[in-house]
Length: 176
Length: 126
Image (cartoon, rainbow over all chains, first blue to last red; front, side, top):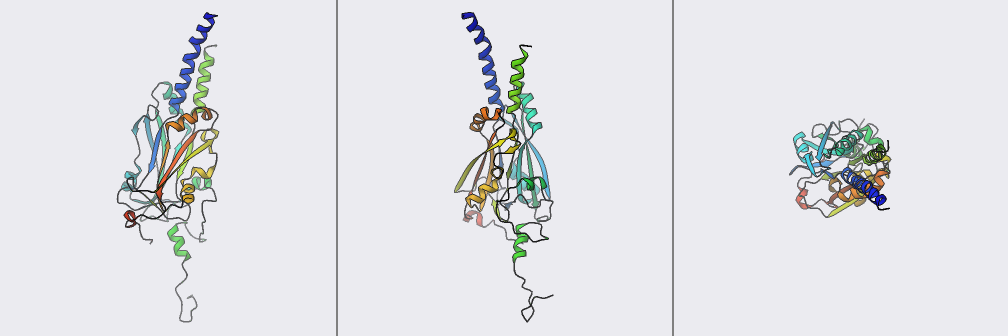
């Protein structure tokens, strides 16, 4: 009986501890911030707005997020790329998960995270390429979108399109 | 063979815990939301926990994976966004995560009105 108990203890406790440790290590801690650089005027873009700037970055953490090795600073990037409007998406991809899984077993806990930064500079506002992937996942109830048939979807352009035609002739008829 | 079973189970469990998930830091369509800097004062802080299904392949409620939903619901005019996976998220994910339901946290801080300190920075529309 005692032999049976000691045998069970010998096998089960380390295994349970290992599973708990593994589960705890796999639930990595990480943070991605979208903030504007100091003194810069930046606008947050909607999901369906065109973006001319599109770049992917990777954040790297060690020991399941306890030790950030390389963390992307969005404010610095926005300032560097001179973006005036931005949006970000954070992705935990399967490849990232596999890296974590393998390194977790080696007790390194390397945790990569993919970050996609999209935006426009003052020169390219409203002239970018639509993010079709993000647009397809955007729910339809996030607010009214009144769009001109030939519009790019940019709010500034939409506002301009909504303004009444002020080019009137002396008779009050719109100019042809 | 007997020794392989626990190792396989452990690997399977670890594999199931390696959840994915995509979160969008964006604004509602047709809006003009100003992005705040890190030290800008804010009056509103909203924390939302986003659950995913299929090991992060799809959010449980797709609209919740967009910061735009929080910004719109709170009526914010300026905001800064943070996506985080805290220790609490990790602990919550231990059991549901194994069944393919990982969790992430989206934090939006901002103001319902453009604050005087940031008013001067608001750009004029072209």
